[in-house]
Image 1: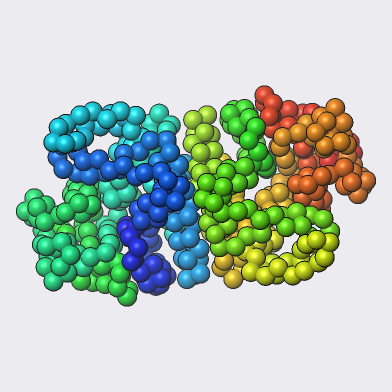
Image 2: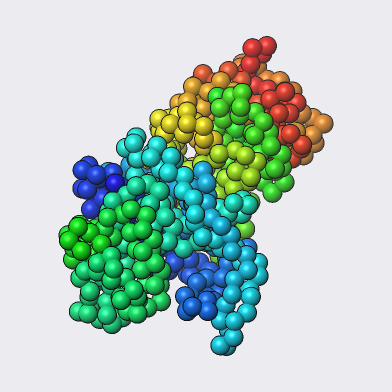
Length: 270
Length: 270
């Protein structure tokens, strides 16, 4: 089984991805996870709900999520982006079924109500945050769909152990899901040629990173890319054999990534 | 199997409904369809997207749906309302899975691009409408979930044969679904004591309507209630034995409706 995580950027080639899925899923079952961060930001702006980004003491940025932000999240991810992507896949002949992490407790998360954040160089505790880290996956529900020919299309939010809808990091959740499903190949598609030595310069792509090389390349990961590398680590630790980073903007984005044209982590030859 | 359609009004007792479902589903599998019209109107207002209501020559009012309206629809129904309801059911111990009519082509509809509408007493043709009438149901997907212990939580929009996301009438779609699933009992919950002889006066409730009595009570159905009576007709024609109208605002709304405290259509004694 292949797990594909497609980012939520504006320039992703969704039709190319859908066509690739339509071609590849005959040979191997497939689960798709998608983001919707650009859409989320647009809807938040239209509703005049500010997106509040916070930075952890270790320098990882994330979105602070209150009740209103969760509403925007549900509208953008589970509502608009998920169903549009499902409809697009259907039009490519792929029997897609959209699910959020809430449905059937697909993504169960440990809530992080109070989070340490850096503000003006100082660490303070921010309370009432509706985010969580996915720890448990309802693999049975996904297998039920996959075994019956469906392609699950999954997105955040998740559900906490206490039953609250919580924002969660899609990249990490996808990696946890890959482990729970016993997936061997995982693909991250986003708006760059792969992991780059220099952000924005596709000609500085790192083609291959062995299992032992993750610490080495971590300094090259800027912003959101840090979470993807953390996802790679999680996935490789959970039994995934190879993780592929690939350019989601190009023709045949999924086939190209699987052919090793982005960055390959782990893998037999690593 | 019981199919419950809960309206999208503000005053529905959702926790009472969830508790009823938690208690009843052990004895009989259950599928839930929900509306979100109040929420849809609120989000449309916040986004400054007007909700355009049109009236057919036969006097049935419906929402005219362009691309922007479909976006609001997806956000309100498939995003916010569906996932909140799923989370609420989960917190009552019900393994709910939320689906829109788009997912797995659950609700397939014949698109009605051009609709005749009454404007200032004249009939004219309105084009580009993204609505449809549900004709085909993916009963296999629903049975797959139900047979594995899940409670499907379903809402509009639907998908047209041409692959477009289309608005559809939940009440009628639920009736078509009841037929496709071979359901014997169907329940409509809304913000009234049942079918009333006089709108707004719960003491004018009609307790029982036989199969042959539908034409007789049609004149009492005002506004949205007309579509529910059309849903009743469709359901009874499709093999449903009894359709229950019930007050969704009260304690134990589902149990009360099934006990015949609202309006019972068809049924053994009718």
